[in-house]
Amino acid sequence: MTASSTRPGPRPRVPRATGARTPAPSAPGAPSYHRLSGLTPVLMVRCAPPRRGGGWLPVADLAARPEAVRELIAHDARQGLARYGQPLRPDVAAGFGLHRFVWPVSLLFTLPWFLERRVPLLGLGDVALRRRPDAVELTVRPAEFACLPDDPAAGSGADSKPGTAAGAATVPAAVGPEWARTVPDEAALAAALRSALGAFLAPVLTAFGPEARRGPRVLWAMATDAVVEGLCYAGGLLGEQERARAELSALLAPGGPPDPARTPGAGDRPAPAPAPFIPGAGFTPPAPGGGGTPALERSRASCCLVYTADPKDMCGGCPRVTRR
Image (cartoon, rainbow, N blue to C red; front, top):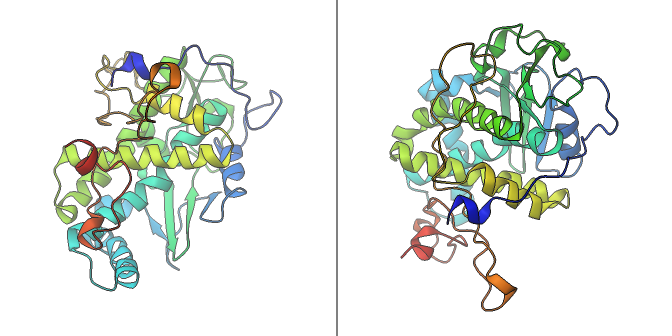
């Protein structure tokens, strides 16, 4: 699959979730989070400082404390035992835990991009989660965000304040338009999304590596699957699944050149290499003319190893089947 076969044509202007062009909300991404939380009972997002205790886990703990990673994985080990009637292999439970972390957390970045054309520049210290048997709760602290030149907040301080996602923990709770980081066009905004999401996920993947017993390439493939599946799920709830597929295919198109844009707020430092979301979104383009056997909806980038618990529970599009 090539970038040219999946990249959509010129994008129509996307209506912002807030409706009319109004000043930036106090919490960037809040309209998107509120809209998603109202559509599904399995994910609730609140704009608030990170929480601790009562089942809440600050995401920064995953990079700082190996025991925090093991505690998160233990939740999936218990769920696996209840579902399959036998213990999951430790690396399989870790893989489930990583997927079920990245799937909702990545939406903190991708959904505002999809609905508002804004990319929150979050650091690990800005997010906390609590997993319940039937749902995930997230808190996200307002932070700087990247936006396009026609955004109401554009030009209100984008080039006047230094800082990147790594410094987002210093942003006060009430965020105004001065925290906007204007980028020139859609390609630069997509680059900002890949960079921000990749920088957020990288230390978490490193922390999960020893428990999941996978190398960096496979870990990034697992993250790619979770990112794609998360936004596709949200797109389905919003009635925009086809647009989600098209935009994810363009966003994660493999084999493209390095991102040309600098990370917003990075000054004169060179832009980091694109995060290795591999091998792309995985959607099969429709056959010319629409005839013949329908193609697989999506080929996954990684195998979750669920077959080790139940051989009949193989995922659709599993690479162990589709790439033989």
